Image 1 (cartoon, helix red, strand yellow):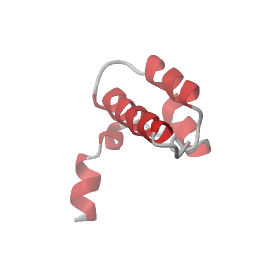
Image 2 (image 1 turned 135 degrees about the horizontal axis):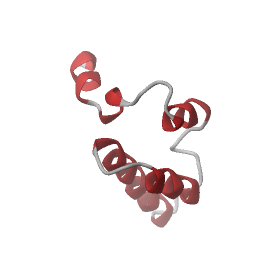
Image 3 (image 1 turned 90 degrees about the vertical axis):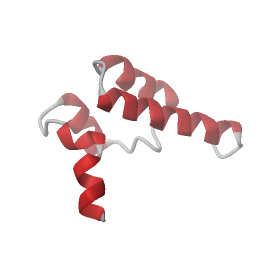
Image 4 (image 1 turned 180 degrees about the vertical axis):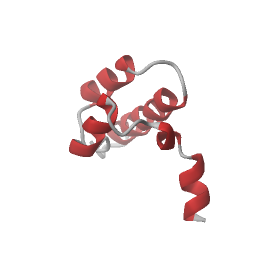
Length: 69
């Protein structure tokens, strides 16, 4: 099942030498500030990867509103 999930994950198409790939190697998107995540979203062109980042952002905002910071 893990192979199936990995084959359809939006980040599968991310180039290893892209700026976003380098950022994600160094920073945890689940721990970075919402402002930092907004910046990554703004820098990413329309597509699956940007939609994935928006999903992370929405999840993080929900956690903040639920009191989980």
